[in-house]
Length: 377
Length: 239
Image (cartoon, rainbow over all chains, first blue to last red; front, side):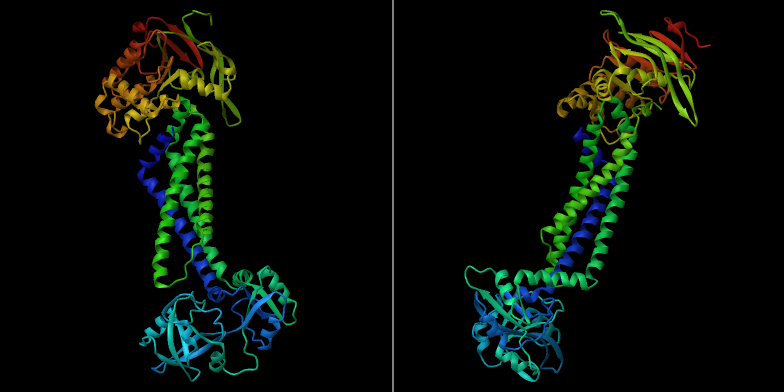
């Protein structure tokens, strides 16, 4: 009877198309919005992921990765004195103003890497050599800088110069890194030169990056560092989640995206539930005839569930396919944020399964109440 | 029912009522009837006299409140729902007034349903259903959908569906009501020639007097009771 159930479904083209498109739209809405949300959250943690240090040391009051409370440079030495620390280096991160050759300004995120080790260096160098950062006035820019400067008519290539706070910066490399939440270009230089570019202040150390010796975990080392007064050690993964949770708690982003995802669920339930109910309702007389002819409720339940899950599966496939296509298209352009971890399609699959079960249940309640004798009326 | 008896069905003192507001309307008020193997029994009577209700009680799609219903030696009233459904699946073929052919299935697929319900492989079921359709003159229409068939052709598909699994009881509810006179006569001809077997009983509910002569016996109903059995249908004239 399952083959017959599928034939009944596939040959009722109008309702079949309506069901599949409704569920595909619902999947698209939920998957796309969840992926854009995840993409945004990834942007908020771009600094943590780009630098990639195992343990980050920050001021004790810092709540998330993008909040910089400057520390004294002596903190590097204090961190190095903690048992279990294999290495500790300074990191400067600050928003500075770059002045381009045409006189226009562009806010940039200046990243000052430890001069000796270049710890936190970009891994994906597209042009040039990261070691050249040690040359006079050398900076490495990211793909966003190339794009944003390019929009102002300035082609970034090796040797291009611009000014940061009235001091010359010369491009010695172009890298590709995860873009930041605010979309400012990353400009990499050494820590010492970053101190020259940055506006002078008493405290200029943004972070201390640290690594544990063998046998000590990142979390353990972070806990040991946190015992020092005034500073706090945070393992990379913890900082990642602290940052994501901070944005979830303190911004309207989750409400905005959550509303659209909820809308997707409601649209899915409304369209699929209603259409499926109509499909069952239109076939009620035939289902009653099947009941009279000896189809048990178990057989009919199997038929209805198969029909519901067939449209669910196909609609889900189309929806996820469209979102993947959309994702590839936007990733190629770098806008808007898009990141689809496996949990997103898995979550949407569960929701679609729920919608299918809900829709099938509505139909099955109707069928269960159906007296086979109605076929004689 | 005695072993070796020719009696296929025995219905005795059957009462069935339906709720109607605060009270109940009695559709059957102690109906008694028997049907024999190898006969076409017609149940006739005016609208609302309980013909279809009696038919539903006999085939177990409705449960009566009083009386006994014995079909092929099985006490229908005492059977559990699941057993009754299985009993219908194996032993009863149905022909409905509105045909009830599933519009999205072909003639062969529609006719194969009882076989599929009896766990015959779909390909084998369709092959046997196609053969049955060919026997009833629809060899060219096995892949046609109901909307592509005339009323008479649709009823022939319904007859194929009713007979394809060789049931011992064939139940027909107003089989000619949706057909013109010629198609009705042809359908009854076909029904009588193909459905009637020595080990099978055919019960037809109708108020179409033009087909009374196809019956072997006629049971006349009025006001929820069988008021008379007529062994000579050719000379039966409803008062």
